[in-house]
Length: 92
Image 1 (tube, rainbow, N blue to C red):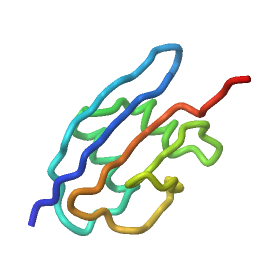
Image 2: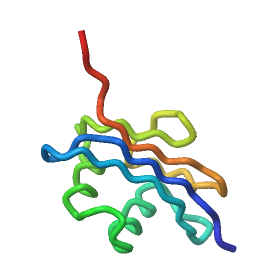
Image 3: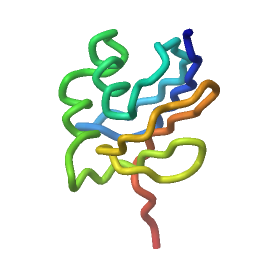
Image 4: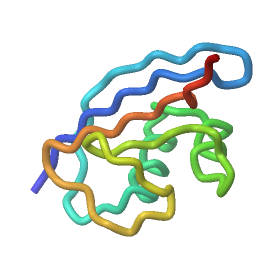
């Protein structure tokens, strides 16, 4: 069974602003970390961006359905999930 996951990337990375919005079909029973590796394999993200997402102290905010998650999250993604990758908010 294939699941559909929406990916939204809006962030600064290595001085460039990345804006990417796409839907991807995945096999069922895939964790967030496995999903990120699959995005790299499918050339949706670069190896450097994958490393940044997976860093313990990454400044990027990773959300699944609007809730912040850690990149080592072992929960399985569900059909219709939305994954967002955002730059940290700053201001004053």
